[in-house]
Length: 496
Image (cartoon, rainbow, N blue to C red; front, side, top):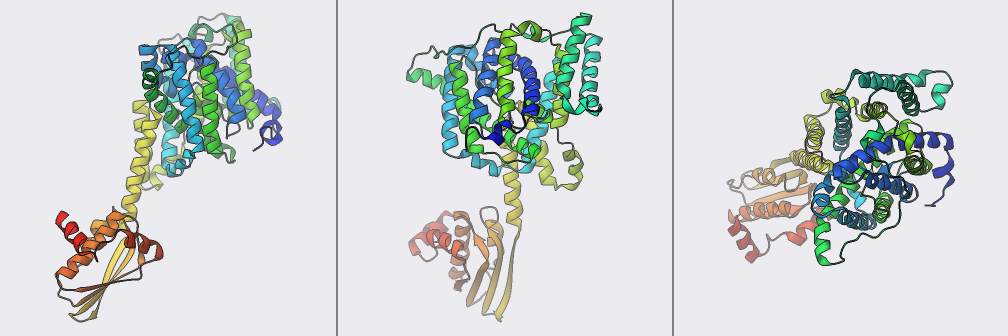
């Protein structure tokens, strides 16, 4: 794929420029907040957001997606920073990037095929709830002015697009931020601003190698953190890419995104920034504000740095209420409201998977655990459902002498017990034919079940014939079946 494809860069210049501005403004307080969560200086999060956004614009596999410092990653860094300090965090960030590049080359993004739609929906809903919950500290124990400003911001965001001509040409979140900042500066209200979040850096980031000893002890310290950051970063990035794919109705290269995230994190670590990943909230802001191509991500990163370093006096005046309004809009827009209506229509198992993903993700604040639980439940429900779609019927060929069993369906670990229970071993017969032309054997457990059925019939003095095995099933059965091997038969039945 060309690095500078015109379609991926310059097909939507106006929309990308304006949306990039909105995203840059919304990134500033988040980057500062995530730095505080991780226990590092605000500039660590701001430099990370700049580096990651700029690099991912070139290396990522999903145009229009925003990557920067994130809360999910910051939560994983707390212990490392507290016990070992910033330098070890930077080293862990570099190792995280290396692992993500390796994951890209190993094509681990293909594992996203095993994440069901109900898990993705649960993930999206959980993130929407977490984004909303993150705004609550800004709305508790505050004066009434904050509530008025926040409501006014939401009014601008949702009503501005209805204005003729101008409503469609400017993104309403940007208008919200500009208008509320002007109101704050003119009125002089006593409310929290971006400047109150922490001191903004006044210099550009510089290249620096982490000041840690390059030995096995250092590796053992940073390895578990780097692995966790790699997994959570890729999971959130892959999920966000899937959501942006849906929002824009365009495909993305997930393996390229893995490599891109790795390169971006290495860049961040070498510039004094913490590890980051794709941000669902900012990506939704970008898409809703008209951003579609790589240019929007690049502009967001560059404008973020320019504003923080050169326009910090202005940026520090932005009231937090304006950004809270934007993030509430994001949480409302992110939440899948159809999923509530679908609770009545969808099967119980699908609803349980979705709700469990939401509950675990919100409860632990860990996206990886939430997705893992969702995928595990979905897999168990699927195995149970497929295991129940198996029918075994029998017909008497010769009265009291010969019977044919017809097996229809999938035989694997979840259905093997039902498979064995369907045969009557006490019936006195000369011959039993087991017709497997409409059955499929998937694993060793299924083959062992077939072995036991054949052996039990033979021990009753009944001749057994297997007919109709498909080529795929025959491959598995021929490789693992032991019912024609006397020594193996004794061992198998002895273990049972």
